[in-house]
Length: 255
Image (cartoon, rainbow, N blue to C red; front, side, top):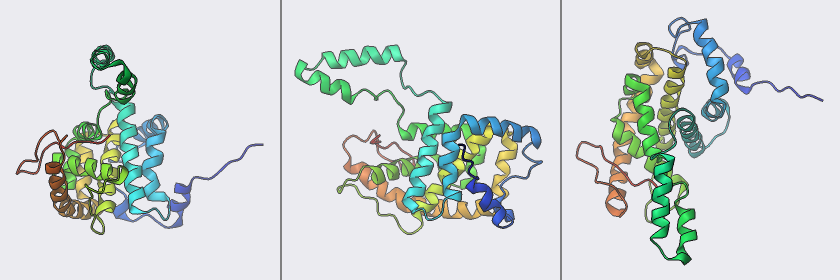
C-alpha cells in the first residue's frame, strides 16, 4: 500500500494569491526555467535545509523561539553540506588530540578524549560568517553590521539552547521573530547562489517592500540585543575578545 500526501506549501500557496511583497524575485529576473531546473536539483541536495527553512513559512502556530531554532538548524545544515566541516585537517587534529590526551593522567584521558571528539568542527559564529561572505552584497539589504549580526545570532542561539541563569538574554517582543527572519534571508540567498543566480540579481532584493520593512526592524532591534550580548562577553572568561566600539567582536560560542 502506498500513501501520497500533498505538500502543505502548495495548499498555502493556492489558498490566496501571493502579494507582491512576498515575491522576492520575478521569474524572468532569476533566469527563468533553467534556474527552476537547477532549483529542483538543489532542493533535493539540500532537502533538510529547505524543510527546516520553509517550516517558518508554512507550519502554523510556531512559537518565535521554534521559528528561530528551525532557521538556525537550516543554516547549520547548509554549511555542513556546502563548506568544510573541519577547522584543521583530519591528520592535524588527530595529532593534536593525541598530544592533548597524552598530556593528562590516564584516569582523565577517556573523559578528555570524549570532550574534544567534535572540537574540530566550526562554531556557529564561524559558519554564519562564511555564509554571509558567500551570500555577498545581497546580505547588506538587511542593513545590519555583519560581525555584530553574527555575534547576536550566535549568542541568542546559545542562550536559548544552553540555559544559564547567569547569562540570560531578555528578548523584547519581536526580537526572536525578526532574528529568525534575518537568518531565513541569509540561508535563502545562499540557496539561490547554489542555483547560480547572479550577484546583481540577488542584490535587487533590497527593492522588495517586505525586505525594506525587515531591514528597518532588524537594524533597530540588534543594538539593544548587542548591548546585552556585550555585557555577557565581559562576564564570560572564555570570550576570545571584547566587542569593539564599532559593534564588531568575537564571542565565546557554547557549541
